[in-house]
Image 1 (cartoon, helix red, strand yellow):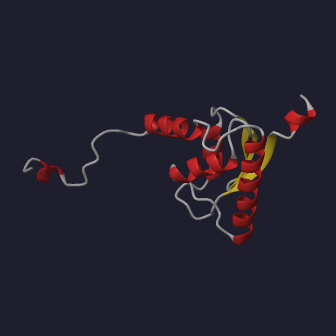
Image 2 (cartoon, rainbow, N blue to C red; image 1 turned 30 degrees about the horizontal axis):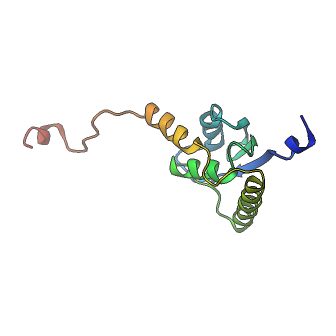
Image 3 (tube, rainbow, N blue to C red; image 1 turned 180 degrees about the vertical axis):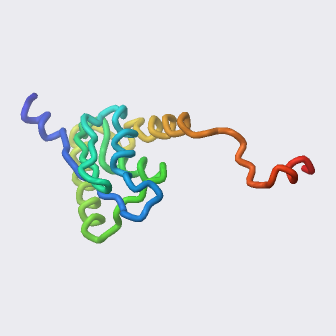
Length: 136
């Protein structure tokens, strides 16, 4: 790997909130992100901390975190994490622009949504009791 390519491989951590129906959000997110293009490694450091290694030309941290929040994960919103996120988003966006990548180039979000949709139970979810259903 050339020295220029080494700058494009990013190592980041994503922190999740403790209060969530899934107590092991990091492990669930790692399993979900394992097959996404551009993500080289995803592993859980703890129940609420996810370690990521990814290629910046293929995917950015902002795209990954947007996909995670839209699929139901809750990111930690303490001030330090929000500042860190904003700094990473800006620097990665500038670095991608300098390397010729346009914003929103990747299909990562679409692929995550497709995989999540395929895993969901698509049976009829009618909350009414059985005896009420025949009247409508």
